[in-house]
Image (cartoon, rainbow, N blue to C red; front, side, top):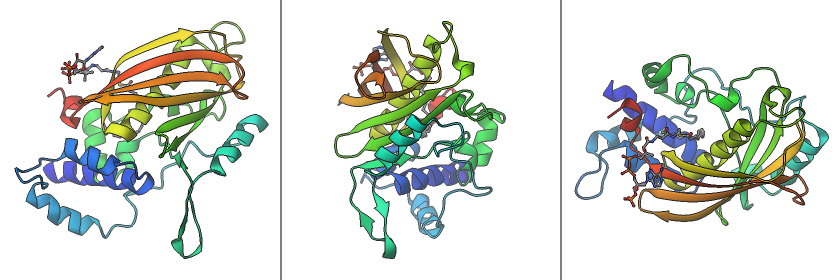
Amino acid sequence: MLRHGLQMARGLCQLLSDKFSVGLHRNIMKHLLPINATGHAWSPLRNIRAVTQMAPWPFSSSQPRDYSLPNASWSAEMQRLYDQYSSMCEVETEGSEKKKGAWRRLPSYNRTLKYATGGRCLSRMLQAKARLFTRNIEEQGAGFEYVVFINKEEKTCVCVFQAGHLLEGPPGHVHGGAIATIIDSVTGTHATYISGPVMTANLTINYRSPIPLGSVVLVHSALDKVEGRKTFISCQVTSSDGAKLHTEATGLFVSINVSHLFGA
Ligand SMILES: CCCCCCCC/C=C\CCCCCCCC(=O)SCCNC(=O)CCNC(=O)[C@H](O)C(C)(C)COP(=O)(O)OP(=O)(O)OC[C@H]1O[C@@H](n2cnc3c(N)ncnc32)[C@H](O)[C@@H]1OP(=O)(O)O
């Protein structure tokens, strides 16, 4: 069990640190793993790390579907914004040299734990049938279509979000709970990449103007401050041209040890 847990931790950390160089590896490791008095990780981990560094890809079995990539349901506006932010992302060039770009697209899976190396066991212990809420609907375009980009330098995130017909609240418009969901997901993901594993402690939302169903909006997330275990994020949802403010929110995210998810 311990071995599976550590493998999972390593898989998650490697996955996330491979993808994002914003200190997440260090942040998650310190929550997942015991640290000795000299500040070094518990010695068996060093052995595990030596072994696991050989693995080129942290996913153990089938290739998970990355839900943040374009699909046929995306409108021209969604695709245009995706292309715009993608063009500002860091890219691998020939010889694996990296071209500098401030932005990175964050991949998004429906079962992060299951696909992380060694995480299958832990995902069974938590909830075998669990799926990330926003990635639960197989029909493309019916629910949450979104992609999150993070700006490492400015410590901001932007999410391009297209709301499908299953998210209807007021006729022809997006349900307030669905808006809260995408805000929680984007700001929660942002806080995770800043501070490691967190849970939402408080989310305060002001709905300023309704969001038409099927439209594409931008969810802007900004880091306000980090105070000990508390990460404060603020968020604005605007029309895709930025001219209209739909929603404003602030969130407080509290760092947790993963054992918190087991009721410890
Ligand atoms: C984990 C693995 C991650 C892997 C990486 C994944 C990569 C990304 C993949 C996929 C992205 C998906 C992204 C989804 C994101 C969604 C996030 C959610 O929706 S989370 C669900 C809803 N939230 C809950 O269910 C929390 C329930 N509440 C709790 O569990 C606890 O209350 C908790 C953890 C929030 C705090 O409990 P305490 O016991 O650990 O800490 P205490 O001492 O109470 O608080 C710490 C500090 O925070 C303040 N605080 C706590 N709650 C507060 C509140 N509501 N308002 C103001 N301050 C509060 C306290 O006053 C204290 O402050 P002082 O240190 O004294 O200054």
